Image 1 (tube, rainbow, N blue to C red):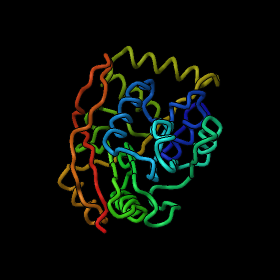
Image 2: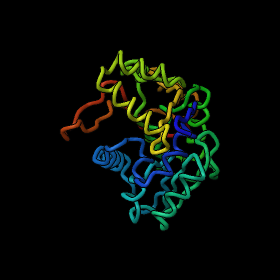
Image 3: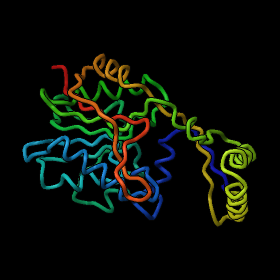
Image 4: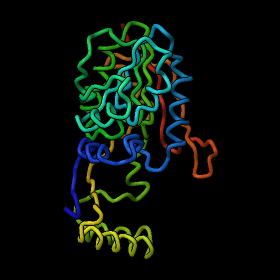
Length: 258
């Protein structure tokens, strides 16, 4: 199928699991240095120790888990599809992965002392799914646990950056011509021709993203059983490798209300 049309991120990550580059699962194409940088920030913030059970909800390419391996009592990575689980287990057989949604974690209550959910809630289309995921993190958290919920944008980034969200290839080409110029338009025409011949595949993703400002995010989390410890702007690397603050994304550190 030369043009594949999907409307959710579960299917998107099922496809990423087929890539030869396992880092595609991090959701940051060709940004391995940023993935490393972001996860080092998380490790520094949550301060894992030898007694911790660490659960990484939406563990991506397992960069965080590799950093925590040997520093915690147990490390568990949650991925949304069996394809991601198989891909990760093949590359990292010493780590434990579970295929499950964030909204229904197959883990006992009060079982995790450190929980990370970074750049995951942003790909949920509905606030109800975000609430369900937050409730599940609160449920599995031990009293006093540290819970990192990161990269929550306060605006619709797709709209701000002019990202196409639809199923029509002609509409996508028109979008590129209007927003990115002739060069991008012609480049996609060439990719489309290659796709027609079977040498490439184009994916059109119409899935929507979750976004919410800090005040409402803190209120949502509290209603789901999480108490705020602190929040701050997300930091990442720009294309030159410089540390910069995100325009719109925030990181939150919570503890359970129990």
